Length: 272
Image (cartoon, rainbow, N blue to C red; front, top):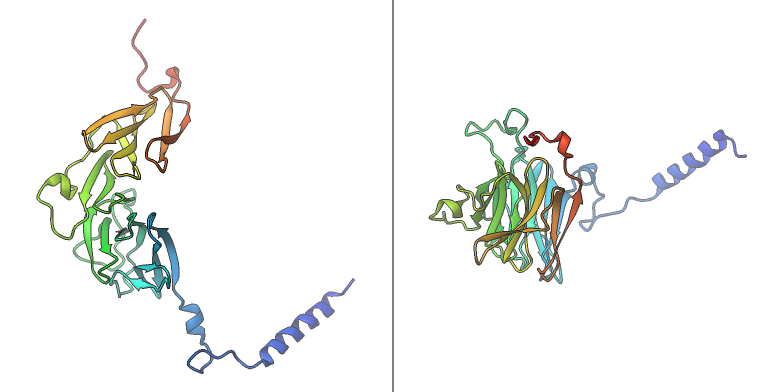
């Protein structure tokens, strides 16, 4: 069995031999620096368009956070946003439309238990958490769409869904301010009893599946955009969550777990 002393000598010999090799030169003819190694950008989230060969991602680069895109065949990175200061403001939840034309993302941090958002730059205007958008054909220009988080972008890139106060809001993805409260995301787009969440567009964009929580059970609800009606999928006394559409927009799969037993419900029946 080799002793630790000999093992150490062998490792030291490899290190010295490696150090004795000439440095690898960059394309400019100079050796890479420590700053170059430590300052490389880090991708945080990556998404892909469903119908075209285009991707989008968030990159963290020396304190600055920006959204990038790239398309086949060369996949040359293009910066879509122009956040060029190390201001500590988060970018998260990047989404891209099916045709790759529109990208949305969240700028700002989630509120803490007291309802305050992080304000690392000490902006006297106050921070917020909002959905922003950009067009891949117009890099460098982005705009605020609506207050909220976890955006769900419609397949055609025209609308974005967010959830606030247990209701579902829809906002138009346009730099021009829409005329109506509903299209601006100031008024709920779908109002249903209970706490509603997890909206998911069907791939054809004609329906929205979401979870309607009623406290001791929950439903998978489907909103129909053409008729502005809702239906419930296999309603029961169980907890139904996590709806996912099939590619042909004809089926929804979801998870089901037992609802709250009758004796443990917060509002027990009053019958004798």
